[in-house]
Length: 511
Image: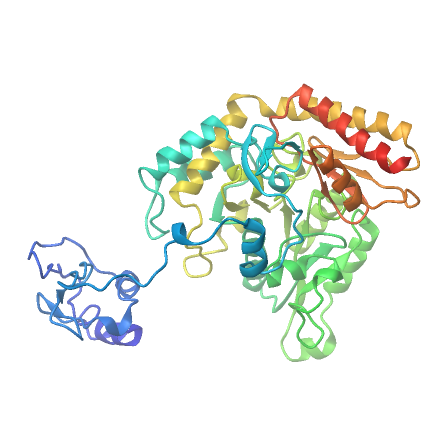
C-alpha cells in the first residue's frame, strides 16, 4: 500500500490514484468531504490493507461483498449479523483476584498479598476493609494522594469531551502543559510520552543525535553506578546496576555506547571523560570518531538507596559537558515535580541541565512522561526522528495540568519542606532509640531513606513487611534502605501516625 501510494504521488496523481488536493465523496451519502488527503494520513487510514480497494470513482466496492463503502466511511452492518463470539469481561469469573493474577498475568513483579480497592487522600483500603497509611504513593507518583477532587474533576471532564486524537493534530492541553513546564524551569521546549523510561529514551536519542550532528560516529553517554533509568533496553543499559542487565545481553554486551562511573566522584568522572574523548587509532583510521555525547545523572539516586548528589560533582559534570559540547541530562522522574522540596531536583544542586526528564508525579498517577530541553538540544529531534502515539494526549495533559494547578495554587512545595523536616526529625529520634537497627536519615523533601544497619538482623524488605502489618505502606530502595515517599499533600498528623507505626514495626523485630 505504501509503495503504491508513493508511485501514484510520483506520477502527480496524488495518493492511491486520487489527484492531489482532490475532494473525496462519501459513497453512501454523496456529501462532499472537504478534506485534503496527505500521504501519511491516508496510508494510516487504510491500514486495514486488502480489506479495501481504492479507486478514483465516487464509490468503492468491498472485496468480498456488495456492501458499499468509501474512504473514512463506516462499513454497513450486514442484514443478518451473527452473534458475537467474544466473551465480555462482565461474564468472566473475577471472584479471586489473586487467582486471575496467578493464571493470567506474567510474573514480572513480586507482589505483596494485598488487593486494594479504594483510596482517599493518604489512605488506601483493601478488599477486606482494612485501611493503610500510604507512604509509597504509587512509588512517588500520586503526588496529590488518592481521589483528589480537582484531579478527578479534570480527568472526568476531559474524558467527556476529547480523550485522544494522536499527535497528527494540535490539542490545547499539550501546548499549555509545555508552556507551564518551560515557564517553571530552564527548558525551552518539551516532548511528551507516557512514562519515565520513555522520557529517558527520548533524552538518550536526543543526546546521540546531537553528537552525530557534530560528527561523532561513536557517541558515549556516561551514567552513574547504582543509577536507575528505566526498563527498556536502552534505559536499562543506562542503568548502572549489572543485576538488571542479566539475561538481556547480545554477545555479552548491552546496548553499546554507555559507560559508568561512581556517583558523586568528580575525579573518576573527569578521568572517564578524558578517556572517552580519545578515539582509538584503528577506529580513527577508518574514519570513526569517539566522543562524549552526554552525562546522564539523577539529582538524587532513588532506586540506588536515596543518595542525593553533591553540588561539586554536578558542577564538574556541567563544566565537562560545556567543554566537550555534550549534553548534561538530569533524570527527574522520581525526584522531580516537587518531591525534593523544589520543583526540580537539580535546583538543589545549582546547575541547569540541557535536558531533563519527568514522569511519575507529573500526571498524579495518570500515565504521562516528558523530556524537556533548552538551547540547541531543544531542536535536535525533528519530524520523523522521534514520536509517540499517546504522548501528551488530551486526557493525560488534563491530569498533568490539574496537578500543576494544584501545586501552584496550594503552595505544596512549602508543605513538602515542612513535612519533610518533620519526617526527618521523627526518623532521627527513632534511630537514636534503635541505633543497632537504623542508620542516618538521608534525602530531600518528601523522598527520604533510612538505612538498615548490617547487624540489624533484618532486611529493608522484611521491615517494610512488618510496617505493612501495622497498616503503614513503605517501599525498599535497594536491599538495605527503607524509603518514605508519601503524597506531597500529607498532613502533620499523618506524619506523626506513620512514625508511630514504623516504630512499632521496629520494636517487634528488635526484641
